[in-house]
Image (cartoon, rainbow, N blue to C red; front, side):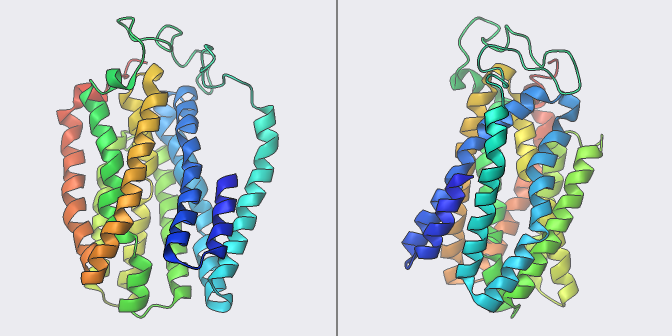
Length: 339
């Protein structure tokens, strides 16, 4: 939480694109804490409650804030300029740091089992994993990432962590620019549309957390990716405002993919390897996050509609692949079914 504060200050002081890029990278470094948080959540939530836990933490909670954030940012940018947006964001992140300090002091060591203790499943007196499985492979070998990569399900999910941030988000990363420059939408309206998208993501996150039929993360991933591709297609086609609203609602349906990817990691990875696999997964997602803006920028310079078309053309096959691979990799994707 402290790094985004520094990043916002750096954005405020930047006078060149490369300075702004460095500031954004500082903000992105805050994601280094995500693997530890995901590992803890996977260990303490039961397999049946895992989708709900991850979607509430990684989708419902942030999207609740985004109901207000984009609209407020758009209004501030329209009325006072972008520097004011960075100042307000820095204050919000700083407030988060202050609120976290008491929690950090109060949290016991070894809550995730890293000290040799055995985590307990939330709402149960039973251990989440056995003490033997928490420290070594069944064959007695150390838990390394090479052991995890022997399983096709793990390789599949790690590849998704690169492709999901890269392919659909190549179309979305410059969506605001496209709407303002090509569709004549004001910055304030773009912010309001962002809030509409966040509302849709919030509803979808709640549905995913409660629906037994959508408990399997791969089913949810396929649906969310398909909706993302449809959203890009609607923006490209254009039309009245109602079409644009429908597109941003479908864009919101895409948002839970990252929570579902985290659930997928927990599902396919043995408990004692999750910390390492979550770390590699976040690294892969970072690669996709970095590559998508560069790809979108290059395409946008040639034709502003090209990022949208590229997103549609790559996300539809990706959604189909995820849907079909659920049965193809069934054994690998259920490696920890008996935990």
